[in-house]
Length: 515
Image (cartoon, rainbow, N blue to C red; front, side, top):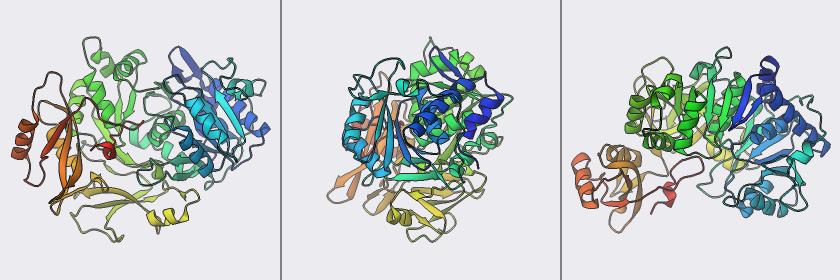
């Protein structure tokens, strides 16, 4: 596989005037985007960055993200995308752990001072030599004294650049895991890993250069799903990426209508949000006429949300599965076949999956087991962490920590994260199953289930529930209803009604913060 930046370069060569990125009234065509990335590559080389050096990037969904991302790749360096919510201490950890030589950081806003936190982290990191602040207005002076802006750094740089040659196994991106257990680890992904996964757009989604899709990008680009499926996947086939810096359901619906979006990708809570924002101001028919495909990943999609979205928008959501460590897509619902609601599909081409026990041995037919993955998409390992790598990769198989079952036709169904499983009185209880049942109650809008310590049972089941507007179900009523719907060891004995659930920047519910 060539340098990952060839995804942009090839489309810029074939479709120079086609819109590549849209943000509000700003529209950059492929020639402009590639030219700006070339300027960043020249800036890096002139700053002493060499092939293989690590360059960090903190930026929300703005045109600057792909400009800098592909500029880093063109220079032969390694992109280290960072979560924009990180505090200074956390930024310092990531810069040091990845051995970053340079850092591009968006200035942020008063509510989210990305630039101030990023610069604080940079100052704590001895090995990181260059800090470039990305200003909303490229001509504006630096808001951080003593730092260079991206605009000033690019000024006068040539919009042409000879992209550095790379080998398939060379590292393209280091994606940091969420760090739910201990410190975050950097998944080292090669050009072949990322390039191959981006090109899965044609077989999985029907991507076609002659009929380019318009993608709404509500997923953060620093995350693997948005980066590969939306950004890289779109550019691989000459598509247009419509950016929304922060997911809000009403603006997302407005952009779907205005920009005639054909491709929507999101995590389950985003689909839930879109459905909840529908009112008389939304032209659902117009959105429905253009929307060609909707894909979900990141966590299990509730069956009720799946059914409701299809009824409203006329598109069946295709579910897939993957992780940062697998570039990320590993399995997907086969296009053109009847969708099996609740399934994450089958392994994509070039990838194998199986279910294993704790000792790495295969499970028996019909047993729940941990998903293991083998294929071109599996990471090289965790950067500078051989022990952590050895713990999850054996004979080419990567163990995911996700529990699933497989049906007779080879379709996989996520049961839960192994770490989320509740053991109540010796019985294994899978939160997702309980959540699915709770969401069939007419007064329940969204539910999350976790285990809480219990003196005699070890753990007790607690449900955190967002009620529908004007719903009046009480805790006692919902507990009694659950008792009728589920086995005695499964139904939640404790219900807490909440206005919102804690979520990551990518929209996943933070189970570990529920108590």
